[in-house]
Length: 54
Ligand SMILES: [Zn+2]
Image (tube, rainbow, N blue to C red; front, side):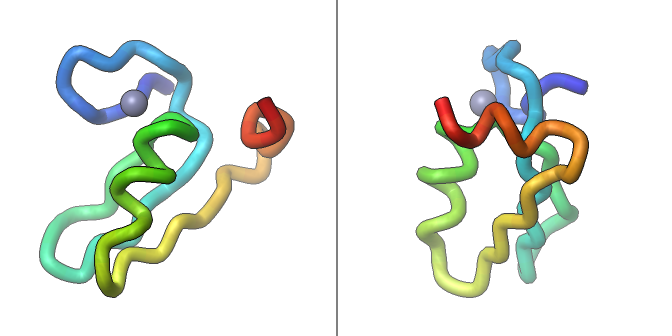
């Protein structure tokens, strides 16, 4: 599973729950950026938690 952001091919490691949009699977860097927005909840995918430690 790849990050759902355009032109990003990193592996998705986090599911973002976005109140105003569909949930997205994103890579760790995108999760950090997008997860700062109000109301967004970043939920690490259990299979990939090691990648968050990079
Ligand atoms: Zn990404």
